[in-house]
Amino acid sequence: MQFLNSRNFIFKKLTSELPKGLYYHCISHTQDVVSVAGFLAEKEKVNPYQTKLILTAASYHDSGFLYCHDGHEEASCLIAKENLPLFNYSTEEIELICGIIRATRIPQSPKTPLEQIIADADLDYLGRDDYFTLSNQLFKELLYSGLINDDKEWHSLQINFIESHKYFTKTSISLREEKKQLNLKKLKLG
Image 1: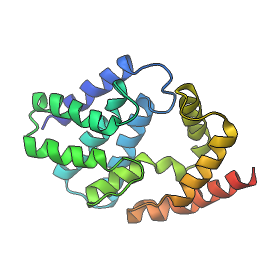
Image 2: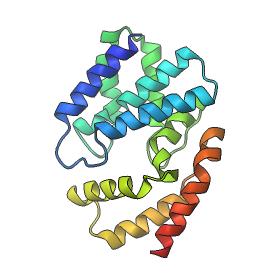
Image 3: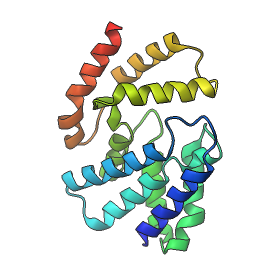
């Protein structure tokens, strides 16, 4: 596996080809998910080989936004299947990577420890200090694309989403759950 080359390839594509209006699902979100996934893999004691699989999945997980919003996870898998063989990924490795990518689909239901890591990495921001900044970017994106109508609808959607969300890894539960609950409390206040 040529992880760095495969990551650089998709990062370049995301930087130059993502459509307008993706204020949240942009290159900085993907870079954040890759960073958090690496951190969680280390804390959860994932071996180096599996860590490369997770980091590859994190790099490609939202590449489907190049072509569509709905069903972007499957589109991301198609992009991975098309491009990862160029970087010496085997068919079996690509299938594992696609399973990890699919674990980011909402509502999340990861089945394996690797899938749990990417699920937590993708929604890590819910339990961070920059939650409201990133949440506002997602609001602008959904408003731009016509998926929501106004901030009242968005506010209600966020409360329901955070109330139903759960972290899966011990690391995310210990580092993010308390702050996520504080962010939820602030949302409910106003």
